[in-house]
Image (cartoon, rainbow, N blue to C red):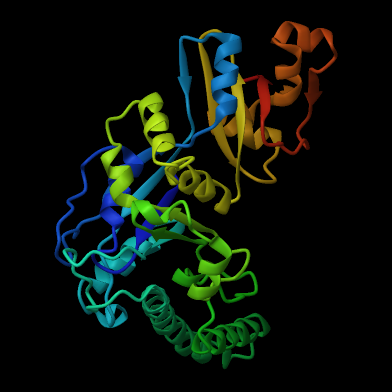
Length: 356
């Protein structure tokens, strides 16, 4: 599944630095001036999963393949982007192509890095981004209202219902609400995409970060995802081995860099789960949406597997680990055969039977 997370925010909040750290590259230009990113940078990032590592120890495969997510570093947004200010039109079009939005909020203080508004005000920055997205959606909804209003004069009940929904969405957006209820219609709204937030802090502020307090100060809800990250610290760790990285972080009193949390949170925010295929040639993690059936999971591997699906032989990850290997798991009765109606559970290890 090709899934994209857009990294957004005002200019000079650390988006490109975070992108480089996530992708462990220096492909995104990082300069001390607004709009140093114009065309979006795209990077493929592995989703960290210790289960995959543990399965590889059991099967000792030729190769191990993680599931991945694409991160997109999008040009900075400024006030007026919804009417084309700065790189507004490009910014908004790139967000439309993403499955979810990861908003970077600047909380670090550094007089050498200019802020586009001339001051550090995280809550105001967040509101600026959200306001521009809402205004862009309002333009889109108003155009739809005009079109559907004309068509609804034919007394078509479905069109009248759609018009009522559009008017309700418009009222919600005008009240500053994100993620308006569209009654099942797909209006391709920017504010309906899943949102998550990154607090970009200085290295010294990471250990004392109070997530409850910071959510309140930003005006976020309890269930919103807010992740503390030090972009400059993580950029410094590019090129470190996993062992060197862990050792360095422990030395400065940080349990992890925060970026693994960003990747994992993005995966969950999109409502995704992982299943595995495992054998001596390859141990691989695969991605499906929650609620997917066994045939749909088989189709992720190859469309022919779904078309000719017979059954899925599956072992739960926990049961395999407890057994120690697949042979013992089978002997313990942990192997089950599931049919077309089986709903995939996170961590299922599958072998699909199919007939082409």
